[in-house]
Every structure is written in C-alpha cells, then in structure tokens.
Image (cartoon, rainbow, N blue to C red; front, side, top):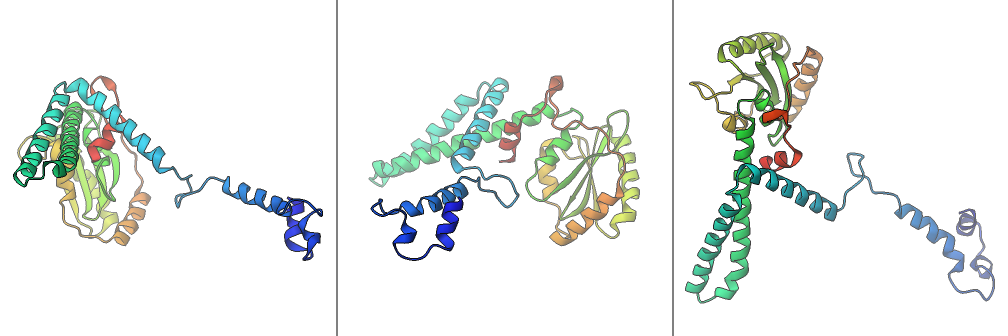
Length: 280
C-alpha cells in the first residue's frame, strides 16, 4: 500500500517510476491494482444502509417463498394442482384456437404458454389467499393481520384498545385519516371504539376518523373485504400531513393490548410466504 502511494504521488516521470529496469511493463502499477481490488471487495450498500442483494438472490428467495406457500396451501386445498392445470390448459387451448383461425398456430404457441402460466399463477394466488383467510377468520388478531398486509403507506397500531375478552380496536393511519377497526363482540367493540375516538380526538383535531367493525352482521365488514374497504376510503390528507399526524399520534402514547399477529388454528403463526402471496 505504501509503495503504491509513493509511486502515484511523488515518483518522477521516466524509468525511475516504472520499477526495475528490464522488468515487465506494468509492474509499477501492481500496488494501485491491489487498492482498486480492495475497494471492489467492499459490499455495496443501498439507500437504506443495508447491503444490496443481487437479483439472482432475490429471485431465489421469491421462488422459495412461493414454493413454501404452495405446500401450505396444498395441505388445506388438495384440489389446487388440478385447478391450476385446468386453468393452464383452457387458456392455452383458447389462444391456440385463435392462432389456428389466423393460420399461425406456431406463432401463437409461446404466447399461449405464457398466458397459461399467468392464469395458473393467478388461480394459485386467489386460492392461497382464500385459504389464508379461512385459517385466520374468527381468531383473535385476524383483523390486525389483514391490516398489516395492505399495500401502500398504512401505519397500523395493533391492539390500540382492548379488554380481557380479547375484543380489540386497531388504529390505522393513512391518507384517509384515522381508521379504527374493531373485532370481537359487536356491543363491546362499539364501546371500545367510542372510547378510543374520544382519546385521540384531542390530538388529531379536524382529521377524519372512520370506524369499522369486522364481522358478518348488518353494518359490519367481512374479514376478506376489510383491506379493500379501508383502501377505498377517500384520500383526505397529503403525505406530509400523514407524517405530521404520525408524530402527534406517537406522542399520544398509551398501553397497547398484546394482540397476536397472523393467528392460525392451533396457535401457529402465519408464515412470511403466505403473507407475500396474499399481498400479491
């Protein structure tokens, strides 16, 4: 290292800076090459300060998660491979029929296969999502699991209010404003939501506050439609207003109920792969 530094900075021009006479050309630059290699050896860091992951590694991780999700879904839905196969065959047959009518069956074959695979993946995603909802429905913390899987900038506080009977109110901060989602006994949940509204009204000011009760009764939102219901609420705040409101809500404090995240029958937790498939 010291030799390369002196060569780059203070060595005179001519043969004196090239190393011993008669030596192979480029020997004097050996130290600088080592320095460059040392820099290249450092792992690249992304904007979040974490080491960057190669695309190949990301693809392997995604493939592993999809495989795990398929195995777990197949255990609860044995018809899954047959339904996927039917979807693939039907789409391929329809596209190939169009190709035959246009006198270009071989030209349409790659398109047919790609569309068939896409149809099979869509069917798999829907069946996996349905299986996941059936597993968590009726379990404490199911609404929290659904809310935490929503796409976009949604800041979920699970178990913002609750009681010993495991009735809970989850607080969601987003572009619509504040959304209070209650799950459990409807009468007790309504009381919890009213208490939480009074508590946060002093902090949020004129920010809209929505309340949602999860269930299959009148005026309630089914669990499988909860994320769509919340995401369809009108956008009343800008991104900057959401950030400012988030800071004020953080200062609100208060005890949080220990609500399980992603419950499954038998006390098992929802796997990361099933969460990824459900989000897609």
